[in-house]
Image: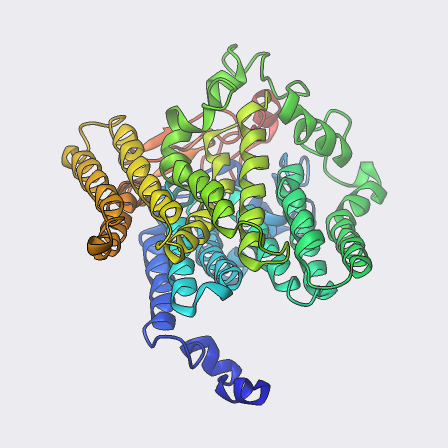
Length: 538
């Protein structure tokens, strides 16, 4: 039987482009079409925003002129001061600019390509966790998850912008993929690669990159198919790889004589550790250390109120945050809860259960931190939730579809469709003059589709479940897709960009300019003194 299974498997290159022999012929071409569509949408008119956040654009330009500025992430080529983040995201953009010449396109090209990569990684992760629910169902769930990532407004904003969040999301998603690859045999190599991915996520945006760590560690500890001893050893190896990949740059900066390197921007004592535990760490969560929350923001108000709304469970659903990330958030939570009910008492190492725990842990930990952190938070931070929401919608939706013969499966599908339609209607009401018909079509179509799924509980009407789920998926995705597409068509600049059809050009701290290349503070060719007077809160 094993020999026959090997004979049915294609050669690696054929599997990459055509899939397995038992796959439906349309599945793998559909995956490549999804990646191509993502690339077209995210690369189209990429320079519309110019240099986007001129604060980081200045650092990229400095890196093209000085390798020392490249290494430290300096804001200027004379290495007077660094940006207020580790330089990993700048490294990628600088290399692109050195290869293609410095321009707005070369600056943003890596960001858009990371969107394509993130879609592919989410697809691969979900597909592997759904391996036991049927090839077609697993692939459809994976395609749905990948599409949700691309159709998230926050992703459409930040994967076409030069802030660090694009690389952060890509690396965290890579860590999720490596963790799932480590499960079937308890592979220490794959879990070590997950540690490397999170280590470089730390070098992208410090502690935010480690918010997914509890979920990844929990999944490997309980779902890896190997002995308990080897699981513990694997986690220790992963921890070591994380520390090395995250710490080498920190140690290098620490050992470098302070008088011969730039000042560490955002710190109070010219050390990276002050950023880790202060400005970019605990200061973000609890306020203080220059993060305002509860204290004074740039205009004298509370930073949390100015940028991210009041703390609480409703923060992710309100105002700009809601428009950026919450379109499918209710559906993801339903998929998590009902999905765990559907898998029931399966073995802890069941791949589908592992997928739900991985994405659910990512969503809950990161979401709760974002909801209650008192320091500076911007709505676009929520892009870090996009892969988790997508993973839950794809994984949970596929599991509920697989269990559609059971009432709990049909009820879960109906709830996901109906609540998504209603919440999308609420969000579209925030901008009632833009495509006013869309919210009513989404609401009516979604509620009708949910009703068909429920009516399908009657044995003679079971075919209505299929019709309801297909139609409900299309209606449910219409709002977030339209808003994401609208986001890609307008210019975004400054340090606090926003989503939607109206151009957003929020100034403020951390670059606060336009899409052009100003010669003032924070802009290439300008002075850096403005940095210290305004600071960067990105």
